[in-house]
Length: 83
Image 1 (cartoon, rainbow, N blue to C red):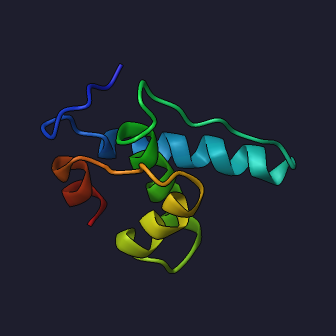
Image 2 (image 1 turned 45 degrees about the horizontal axis):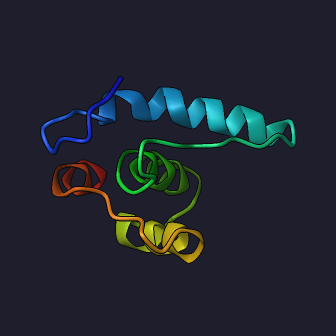
């Protein structure tokens, strides 16, 4: 389980998560991405996926997530990892 700490390395999970989400989407499936508060870890994974399938940078992808989840706010360590 990944902690919601700026020192937690989430980049190690990006490829696995992106592949899982993308495979579900190719089958017209849905994926629920969640964490305890739905503000930092899950948002980081969602932003990483959006960046992998669009030309959006992390700030633009975060705006997409915030359109559906206004409290989305990855911690500063996760923001650095998305850059």
